[in-house]
Image 1: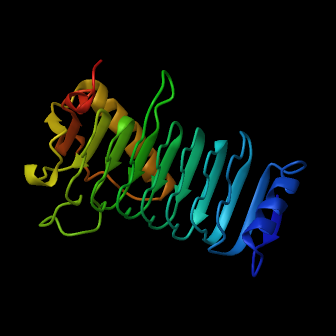
Image 2: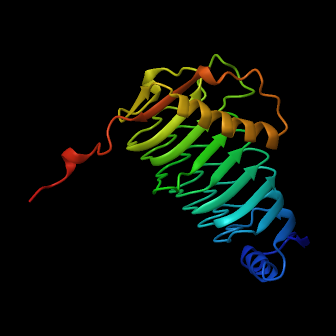
Length: 245
């Protein structure tokens, strides 16, 4: 495994170093990362990055199969238009996590910011997944067209909602799973609560088990039957705004 010290290295230079290194090394450890942007952008399969510090905006943009593990928090737009691969964040994430994400998985140990999962989509077998252990800010799953978002709601008061207002606004595909019940006024008019199926239970168990194993958390107290599922009211919520000639 190759180690790269990112201390005081400009983001363009750091990304060039990563690109050159993966020609001979599949696993890279980045230490002293401090806000450098676009780390992991477009990286292909088999490449693994272990990132120590706080990567900057746009990490893993257009990533195409690599695995990134971040030992710290991450900033905004993680996984922007990500095609495939896996991101594991041992901390919290900023806003617009998984923006237009098209495939792969993102696991966040803690909380996520505003507009996580905005414009997520899926195509055939490509079904992106975001799992966060804490809570999310407003506009979760905004304009969501596919994939799944799972909020576990760990380590905070059950007296408050685990999601901000306008959840699912403009949603026209995919599914949002929230631990517990959330007041209806927190959701956009395009999202509706639906019944949990056996397939949903198996899906949740798979991803919760991976979260538990990855972050070394005992989640035996977490009851899958306590989750609520939200889906789109219809697949074309703005059809009445189109012009027909």
